[in-house]
Length: 369
Image (tube, rainbow, N blue to C red; front, side, top):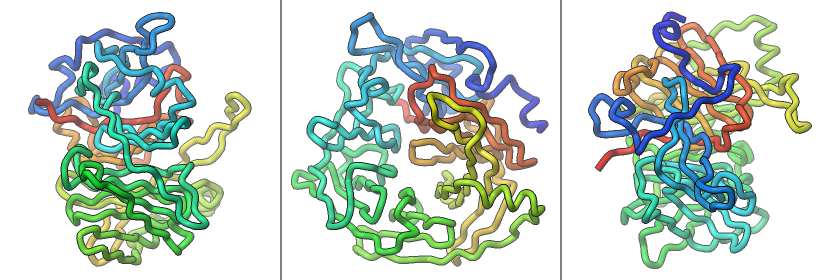
């Protein structure tokens, strides 16, 4: 707990008072990393409408170690945050993926990237979706990019749909089309896909985390790896019963040095009801460090790292690169709640997400030109 007491309250969204907003022309110098080469990770909070009927608003963000939101001069389409006709379905490398209800097309947009241009936003349409037999392409689990920009010639976009279908395309190619894969094993139907920069392939954890599937688009080969869990903590019967009653999700994340972690996120419905819906609350997190032999070693020490979980593709940063960010922590940001988990003593601090937060995305650090 000492890590938490050495700084102001980490996440404003857990305060029992209205969210404060300060203005900024862009990201001020004190909001940049120590190297001044990249922005800090941030929450996408909302947008302040420029006028009563305006279709644009000023982007509002929150850095995880600051105590108030920042309203940028950058303008974003209000439809990205407030229009049900344009559904945001995921985020990777600062690109928001949207699914239009009008034409059914997937698009990648940089509108919510704090450092991207608002006078010349990039909105890249992906090829028309092809639905495999006995699959669906209306509900998306998540989106993952193999590079920082879909405009890179070699960038591959992976879209995981709820159910058996996993699809890939290269948006920068003139004749781009989808490569569609039907996954036979049901344990992957609700899983999220991620790209491993170290291994140069897409990975997907099976339900329960006992299997990891990989797809190498260079060789067009896929592989299944079984994990052997080690150093598991001893749980009381009460704790085990609680975890067994939770909804569980598995998330793969890669550190800047190429270490791979599997995070198991346990959530359970709470007594808080909002608009007739019981809110989910985090009960536990378990982090495992993976190696090439398939060992998954439980750990409470990830060193100087901080892991970020949200509706975006999970990412991991060095805490020392961003003054004020606590190491050995997992930052959580979901539609029901936000908070953080201190791995050292398993402290969980979360709260119901304020209604002022209109997005569930965490933006990873962005390089500055």
